[in-house]
Amino acid sequence: MRDLKQTGFADRLATQAEAKKALLARFKPKPSIPDPDFDRRAEKLAAEKEAARLEKERLKQEKEAERLAAKEKARQEAEAKKAAAEQAKAQTAEQIEEERRNERRERKAAIKAEQRARRAEKKTRR
Image (cartoon, rainbow, N blue to C red):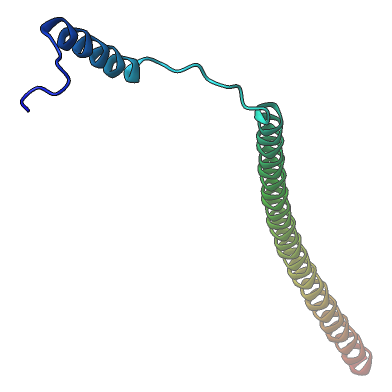
């Protein structure tokens, strides 16, 4: 009962060679079947990438618009502050000039009153 199949040396070598071929066949690349949805998936992926790119571009433009709006607002505020400061300075200058005019009027009025008083005094002495 030792050797039921009655295989000889040549049979064992042939079996070994077949097993070796089968083992090596496992590592050989198998022919691939092309995916029928490959083109549709590629188009879908390209569309998703394009949508993402457009969204990113839109966000970038919104951010740039916000930045420019903030910059413009800051410029307008600075301009308004500068105009207010110049107006205050002009008003202050006008007030100073008006005070100077009033002082001069008062001084001239006082001088004229003094001169009238002298004339009146001269007339009363004669």
